[in-house]
Image 1 (cartoon, rainbow, N blue to C red):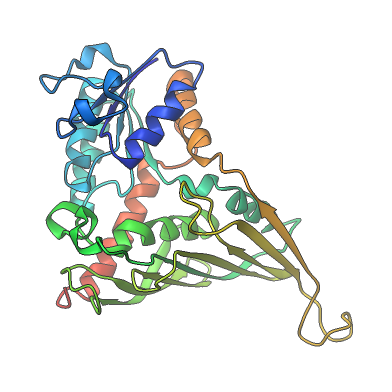
Image 2: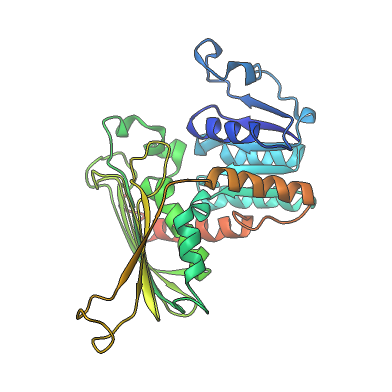
Length: 333
């Protein structure tokens, strides 16, 4: 399989490296007209910025800023039929609907969006522990995902609305919303609050969201660019116990070691400590999420089947939630 990667930034380099190690991939080329090949270590893989030779490729990976993601996904569907696009799927729900129309016009397509957090080991371990045979039905979910900010925060394209489409919600909160729906299915928005309280970039630097599952389980998200510490926490309350996921394996290691706390319900007549049931802590030190995600996409292409994660339907669900969240506080930003 011959793969074309759009974008030679952080994610483009990650995807290209994974593809080069895949046994079914025979060629990887990168297209980024804004990169100086004289200063780029991956220069041998760069295409000359001219007309894109679509016929030379079997699959496309879109790893670009948000303002061109939908456009390139549509072109990839038309010319190759097999597209992997990073999150967010587009700047807004309407742009993603245009991608949906392009997919409908190509019945033999494969379309996947990059929600790699589903593949993180602590998330997979937590998924295996909920439901029948585990801790029982999920009673509530609560997640916090945030950044330390950084001295170049205001200059980043991620915080320029014309390019990104939004702020911290589209950058990081979208991952947590996807995880919520991974555990509970489609969610409905109850209320939200957006703030541009510190950075004053014209996009939200804090978002507080209350949601509800089809069965009525409450779900709460806080996504923030003012935590001053890279943070990922995900709590799952169940009928027979609870799970607390902390830390997230990343390229920089700044979110800390992944660990999953497993607590099983114990009342005072079952435990030696009042209100403190016995807990187990499981640690994870290897992140295979990038490889697993790419493997699933390429397997779906090869086997001519629908992918199991990151589907168009899932992307539309999460982008519809984000549309509704922004609509509530549309006058704030």
